[in-house]
Image (cartoon, rainbow, N blue to C red; front, side, top):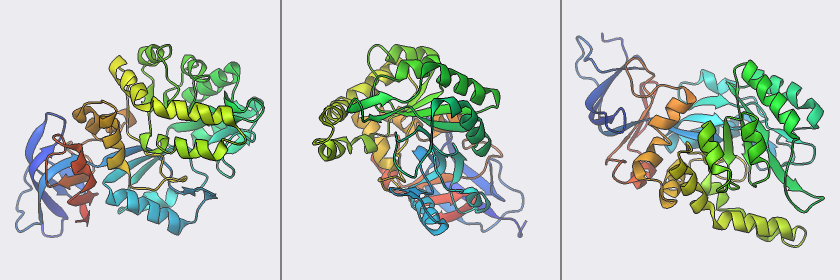
Length: 364
């Protein structure tokens, strides 16, 4: 077996929140819990091992101005990898990042195609900007381009009202989500405010990004329908700065953004307490830096989510939600190893000791 790629991980392997094993082996990039026959003198990594972390709202191939070149995309992906993020749900990008799939040293990406927004109702150069009559066709198109997800912009600043407003009529949203589901894709939507949430959930949407507009009226609906949220609290922290910048021209919008920011932790905790699935996402790639996954987990804990559930929101639970394997027999050997138990203190996530991707040590 001398020609095989073998790595041994010893210590505490967190295959699940309460499923702790003493060791695993990575053989030719795959996990096994059975000692390979005839193996001697292989590299050994010691510590607390987690499945590669998940950033469920990240944008590789995008910066504040729009699409970026491959060198910049590579740097973004490497920054996420060094933070321990080995699985990304790319929640909208105008760049073609399929070439990353051919690199065994970069995180795996689940793409949602390009954002679909209402005309002049989103950040310039980010999205397909269309009118409601074209929504179904564009959803079908992006479902084919993505990896089982489509991303809508559910609300944005309405210059006529001077405040956040829903972007799509109910009928078009229902038809578009139904079309996505027919072709096997799930749908998520950017939503800051309250107005669009009920229509989107009742239309069958699968997830809401940010979800700062959740209230006691809509949280039970999310819980009943099993609609997940990805709060992106590290991004919501920028709301006061955004509000300051828009104060002179859009005072209603600015006041609304400050209000959403002020109650952000209460909103997330109320959703969690009601049974709404909550997952980790940073919104990196627009104006926000990559590599903030540990910060977002810490923000969920600050909001009142128990540490083990905040950890699951970037590890075991997040991978199950996205349909990707954990640290199970035969799975790709994508894992992060820490010096201490991250279940006891999520701040441990900020200092990965070893990062292993496809059975190879890529950092440490």
